[in-house]
Length: 288
Image (cartoon, rainbow, N blue to C red; front, side, top):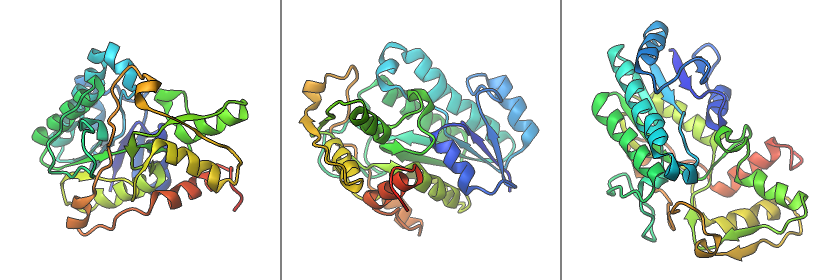
């Protein structure tokens, strides 16, 4: 089996490289393929002839997407379209990574795969458009929505960091972390997600999936758990989304229910606190 990973040097792509055997994986970065260029995509993909394409590439700086919505659409929607077509032409399956931002966040129970999307940001709209392109252009698709990602490699689009490292850096710099108490997520370790994607991609059980670590918390609870695990005497101050004043709307509740994984006979991922402990260990913050 040959699996092409788009965005192989990113946070999720790096962990895919840890779980997919080197004999199966072909890692591609922006230097190797520009997914917004349909001709180049066709040339690269037809030359490699993979069995599966996993697309982790995205323009995901949420605030920037509001001012650069055309670029968000080029990458998140049109780029997904180009890959879906190229995969279809050679009979390959495509795994497309999407987001909780396709929902409004105006509820208090986990979103299922059957719930109607209603994005409230340019980012969410562009990601939903990408889902729709992939869904109708290639019947052999896995559309995977996830939430609150963090991984050892860090997020390239966000300066190589993630929420966990940003919290630790603030304390190291002598700052008191202030985190919103009224936005709820399902934090997800990219290593766990990568392993589940690899399992799913080999299942031939195509469709739409929500995949996150189990459980939920506010961003404040997430931050507090980091310091609790590390036994650091840090008091995380509470704030609200209204006080934080982010440029783009953030869903107040974007926890994803993983019903379709269960229907497919695949085990849910472990609780987020267990995953966070392993991340902190792997990152070297916690002794083994």
